[in-house]
Length: 226
Image: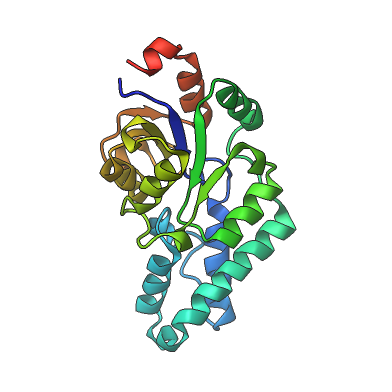
């Protein structure tokens, strides 16, 4: 087993149950510009990708929005924060705080590495009372390339001072798992957003984030560093 000295967490769908909020925000974008969303899940295939991918898909579907490229992203991010403010943030699984505290107590480094922008990320971490667990938070606007490029995970490992090969990455999207693999990390796939069969090959797969963390916590120091 690869040595696990740190865990790098995706945010949306992995720590918090926020993917539906992103989809809802994109539907608000279309409505704002006078279009009817094709379906509530019309942009589901952009889960885990930077918002620019969903914006480009929106423009391909509605070419009259090409002149609103920058406004589309600003509006989506605003709508997302408005939804979070109105509905609050639900954790992706029960007992998240206890598990994170147990990982910290064992000296395992923790970081969030997400394709969300900084403002959205800090808003959600604060609302979910998760900020105190993560001394390192790397967001899309802090690196050159978002997932599926490895930049976000490489930067998170660098800030923790831990080699990427000694980091386990928890991911629930194809783009994120691809990024983790490219970073050289131990890839833990989660079926929180898509079936495990839809992810690229992973080192370990679990139905939930809770299951993955319980597995890591079950490993003693010898097993984690073998």
